[in-house]
Amino acid sequence: MSSTSISAAGVQARPEPPPRTWVQRRLFDPFMSLLKAGLSPGSLALTVALGVALGVAPTVGLTTIICTAVALRLRLNVAAMQLVCHLLSPVQLLLLLPLLRWGATILGQGERVATLTLTQIRHMVSTEGWGSVAQLLWRAEVGALLLWAVAAVPTVAALYVGLRPLFSKIVRRHEATEAVAAAPPVPIK
Image 1 (cartoon, rainbow, N blue to C red):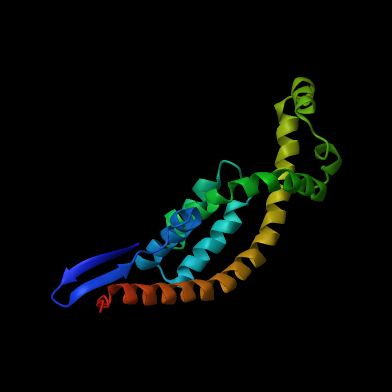
Image 2 (image 1 turned 90 degrees about the vertical axis):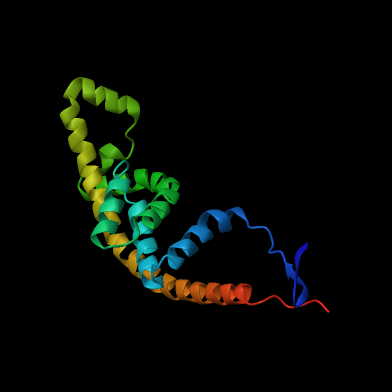
């Protein structure tokens, strides 16, 4: 359906845009508003790349604080980085146990962490105390962070290099669309 307006130039019609999808409304539109707010395509690409890397870091519960600190330190958009980080929360949870197991293997505790269950943790706490559990999981966490850091560097670089031209193209296309929308409507004959 199109809307019509009557002016001195005559009757004019503008077609209505198609309905927006959930992805467009929840992901694309917020990024476009960030680009309109003055964030350059390069800055947005770095924000997304770092948000992806930090969003899958094996630091459950600290992601928000770390993302905020990194965004503020690098003068990137905090909201955009938080959006990316929190969208990747399910991926972070899926990668947590494998990273902890591989991290424990790297630091020499792999056989104890590989099959660790809640019952075993309770038994360790009752017999050896919290110190042994903390030491076991601490080593696994440090190893997981080492593995994540090794993988995060090329991931951030690849995402930055890949997203920068994409965001530039999106900005150009969006500016062209806005220019067409701002043009006077074509009169109906």
